[in-house]
Length: 161
Image 1 (cartoon, rainbow, N blue to C red):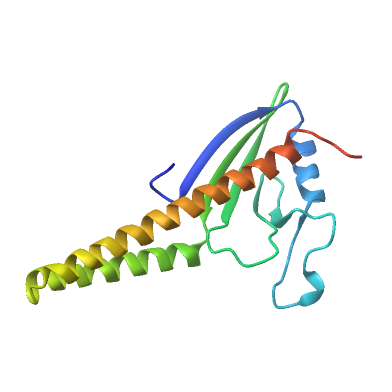
Image 2: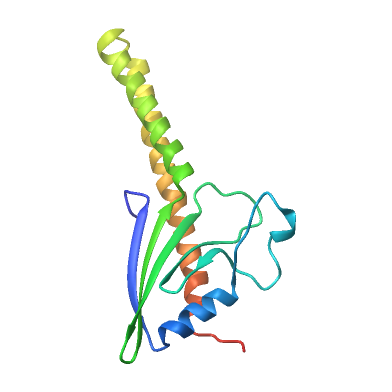
């Protein structure tokens, strides 16, 4: 389990760069959450954008999930296929709230340690900050595993054409 909301991996594919990006493009949709007509269609697995060099995608989910990872990837051509570089990270909004609440709880614990000494409240605030962070990392790592599994099923070349 990672201690930070970030994970990365690199793997080699026998498919060319164009084939990898083409396959990802077939199962990825650009979505505007303000327009209901662009929401998930049956054969799509990812939301996001697939470009000429890489992609920025996330797994389509049926309900909101704060800890869903954003998958950033680059694909480089090689003589016998391609190399895929993948980074998993929290969406910026989720990262902001994780940092915000961690800083607030640590500030309260410092307040209760140094300004208004109340060690029970200080320990409570530190405990809540730690529980908040560890819970976030647990759910983020769990979602990374699920997203990785879906990505591998698609890119491990189970082509259904």
